Image (cartoon, rainbow, N blue to C red; front, side, top):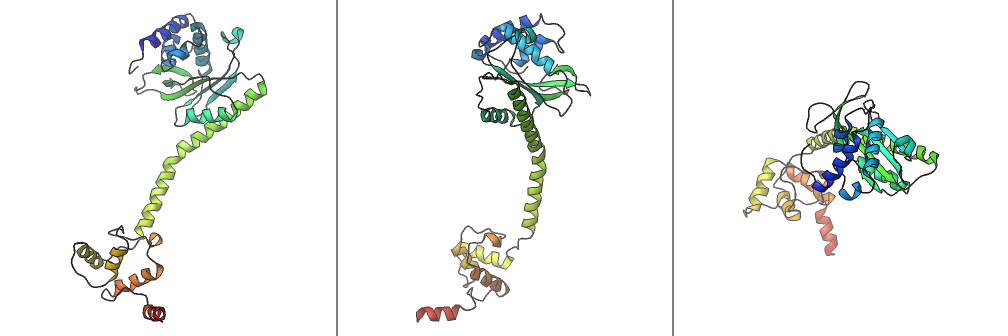
Length: 286
């Protein structure tokens, strides 16, 4: 396992792993699973329960996620009972096992917040696990290994929910959220590629500035005198205009000036003025 953790945390996890050795019939070696499962949990949180409760909780979580076909998340909401689960808690526990994806933690937090359930404890290891074709656990691998896939295992404690119907409703909300996340994560490469294709098509249809006008703009910027033309007018009107192409829909120059530019391109020596410029000027003087 890469990296190191504080010695105090490691000592707490070792105590849990010692108790986990007593558990029989686990899908994977439970002490090793405990080491990986609790590795990212802070010392204060590891002291919120006794070591035996943490060991029993890890064993139950491992059994819960022992079989998970590819693409199918596992979700459960329950109140731990000592006789059934080997540990008990005043909280309701939410557990999620699924493929590792972005946005999982924040999305689950949103679902719980919408249900007015503040998070009191969160355990969220990301583990590389190998499974067979039916989704049965085979082994736990190193994070940078070649076998298996990265999976997100979330264990969240929230205020106690006594109504089993609310347990089921919360489970269904989480499953819908996971499906939304899966669609968003799997669809964004196609959306990005489509956006790039559209940008290329639009850019290909933008008319380029004629070389002659571009040269005049370049010489004007270097201080060389030029005839009164659209190129100099454009340079004075908008110094931030692109050097090689203009997107007409984004042009800030008045529409009549853009029409005059088209005439100036055909006849570069003609002043860049609207067709009725003289009449408009005479009326303004009168």
